[in-house]
Image 1 (tube, one colour):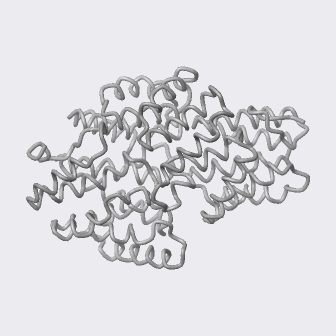
Image 2 (spheres, rainbow, N blue to C red):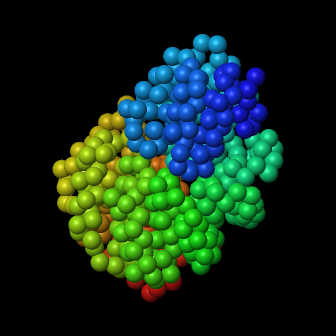
Image 3 (cartoon, rainbow, N blue to C red):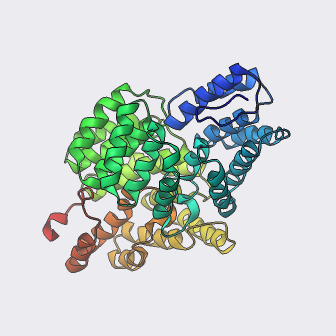
Amino acid sequence: MLADRYGLGLSTTSPAARDAYVEASELALTFYPGALPAYDTAIAADPGFALAHAGKAQVLMREGNVAAARSALVAAREMTGGLSDRETSHIALFDLASTGQTDAAIATVYKHLATWPLDALVISIAANPNGLLAASGRIGQKHQIAELMDSIAPHYGDDYWFLSYHAMALSEDGRLAEARPKIERSVARNPKNAHAAHGFAHVCYESGEPDTARAFLLPWLARYPRDGFFYGHLSWHLSLVELALGNWAEAQLLYRDAIKLDRHSGGPQQKMSDGCAFLWRSELAGHPRDAAAWRAMSDYAKAALPQPGNGLADLHVILAQAVSGDDAALDLRARRMEEMAAAGRYPSGSYLPTLARGVAAFERGDFAAAIDALAPLAGQNERIGGSRAQHDLIEFTLLKAYLAADRVEEARRLLGGRRPGASSVPVSGVAAVQ
């Protein structure tokens, strides 16, 4: 039987289809361009190759092409006759994940990986900071992801791709001393892996090393294709570095070159998150508002993300609606999230509707009301998925509210409870309480 890069059997008798599938999966795992054409090559060589259709669906979904992703997944499901148990489970898991059946999908992940730990594509949708476990709405999911990666690490040895995922999980769990050598080894073994570059940026952020991150990301991005899915997001990471270092002009250039809507290389959710996060964090740092950019983000949210669904993206839609003064849209989204949560279809529950009220109060200058809404949410940020670097936006907003309300001791307590070693706090006025 033909097999993939990790030795897992594939239900195709076509060597050409197998080779194209292996290439496509490698590109999908490393976030390099070309995965979709390679999956299409595999399908052309063997139209009945179910896993090629499933892999194509995964890439289309992360790019925001939901209709095409569902079509590809339907094709995969229609070809499950005669597949191995592993391939059948693989496709069933993708189906559960794509239809929002998060709890069932997570249960399937654990069962699947207990039997087939070398199924890297399953790990890639389950264990990344915006993956299935992160979208569970559960407190403690970062630790759960790290434990999962620890449990399957012996099966991968020194595999460069797994090292990058494992390091990222350890970094998010606060285990930086373990994460550092793994991410350095991953980058050394294969620099052409956007997940390794991403993991390196996060390790530097959590370790408070902006200069190291800048020295790495500048030349790495110069070699990474502009249409690579992570070009925009890694440029956002670099923009945080520039903000932390006080390099406002460089941060603005990065925004205009790779983060703003018409320049970002990612899907709709990533465009929304990175664009709004840069604009909001810039203002927290004391830089002027870009009203036109905020209007563009608000308009984009209406067109591309009209309904709530992904917690991290919804956070940034809320920011755009608050800044644009669209109180009706903000209230409608908050009520829709509450309805979905009551029906068990919004994993983070009441967290984001409450946060929406806090953000709206912050934007209108009612800092006491903002604090009343945001302070009780402290410690729950992981309920929306995403990384700790992304959660800092929420923490920095509460800090700015304390400073604006002249609640100095509360600001000091917030700073004192911040995780050790993490990046600096680019919030205007913070120096007075440090």
